[in-house]
Image 1 (spheres, rainbow, N blue to C red):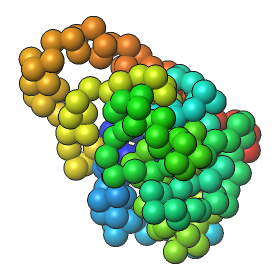
Image 2: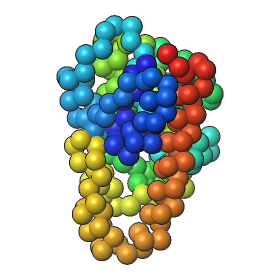
Image 3: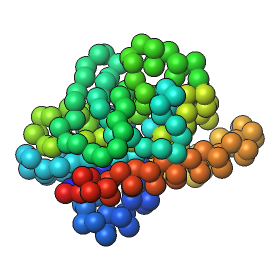
Image 4: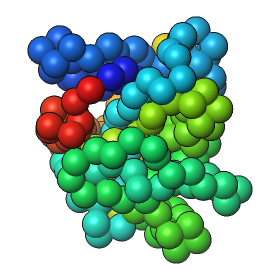
Length: 210
């Protein structure tokens, strides 16, 4: 099984499990651009089991922070839909893929109503397109880092670079502009770590191994 994570912190949390389980791993970088760059560089034959794994936002009450779920369906904002071909254990939720983070409860509520999705990320649609074109046996598993009632920090999409690495100076500048982040960031960090541990549990379950 090959596991691709959009962000380096996601990869770091999973890498010990990958070593024990014999998975191959890579980091794509965030968003559609990251998936497209990764797809140009990766060489995996048709039939390979490939899983996109990382954090997501929760859009519905079914997506609780600190939990993980496989995508039953991937949806983009244009209405395109993909059904994963690989089955992972545990519960499944619909995943919406967007171009920019949905930061506010209002934005999340509108997206959930319009698209009928439970989770939201920025990579699943691009990954689903590539995986389908290349004939991979593919799945998406996401850990929920923020719930439908949570607000994300302004400019959070700029806190990682194109390679998926955290940009500490950019984060520090954001905290200087918004000191209230000192109160909210630790909780977001804990939820994100718990979300990735939940992703690890899904991947390590018997039907998640290959």
